[in-house]
Image: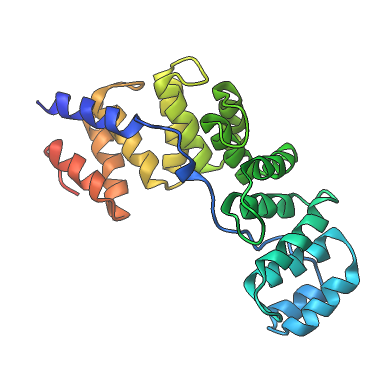
Length: 252
């Protein structure tokens, strides 16, 4: 009975593995220009920071002004103005600005929603090695949103981001190996990527890995290992992990 339950759990966990719901939807406010603009910003002198950033006339300064326009720091919040500043910086190769601009096009915030434009800017940032952009572009390739659907290409972008230690990408890549989507089905390889994310503290990956140990799928069957990983996830507040522990006859 427990074996059947675990089989059902793993099927549920890996069904519909790739979804745009996994897209990062929060603008990053990192990479702002250095002193003296950044010093003023950190002190809460937004007017002074804006003057300094605008005076710099370089991509980092333009990016910083875009961040402040988006957040409404020192100016009235204006996503449209933020998009303009991000575009200026992005056009000069600023990877984080390219990523942020992609997010604005994805959300239709400050610009008209345009998935093709979003994918374009994500691609530029991804080609510079920006892991979050690589993940987002992979997700768009997997769904065919803004680009042609291409599961091998999705897996390639996930692999690049996962190789940088990005846990979300490691999870998506692991899911693709479980299902054989865009890559040859390989449960051992799936478990390897889930383990990396689990070790990094991802409760989701800890659940996946725990279930695989419980089932002996991609790893040697090991109830103690299964319980250990599921308990780690449960300790982070995962009710799903707690449910699986109860099905294994364990407790958190």
